[in-house]
Image 1 (cartoon, rainbow, N blue to C red):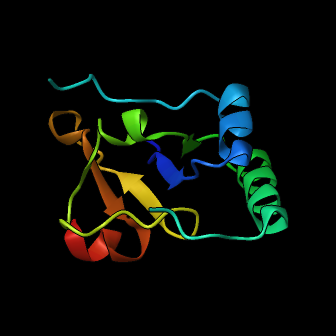
Image 2: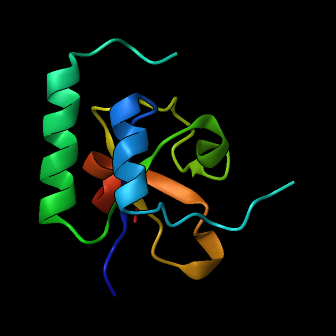
Length: 103
């Protein structure tokens, strides 16, 4: 089993790279900081090329399908999240730097 890694990027760059690899979303249930465009493009290209299991959450509708497992606010562009490996908890995204601690 491979873990699925997500990054939130609601900018134009995120939307473009979402076209190349559609986000694997869970079944639907009933204030981004400003960054340089160059960094966003570079991160998106690196993630797309290096990881088959990397997805970009491109808009609020997609983000609303997930829950932050730690109850923290979402951190766009900088923070990576790992989807909970259990099917029953697939709506949970865990901050990558706290994944082992959480599991």
